[in-house]
Length: 72
Image (cartoon, rainbow, N blue to C red; front, side, top):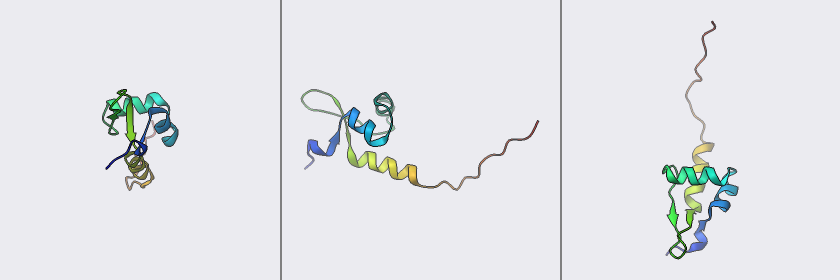
């Protein structure tokens, strides 16, 4: 059973990821990270596990070669 301890508020999620609270709100609204609501006060909540998953995705190196610009 999930507990509210497993969730972070907007401010706590922003600090956890190192971004602004508005960025967290935008990412939640745009479904870039799953957004949940507190059952009593309807505040936005974010699962710690979802935020950790996002950080793991950021840490993965990409194998795409950087596009080089053609000189003019």
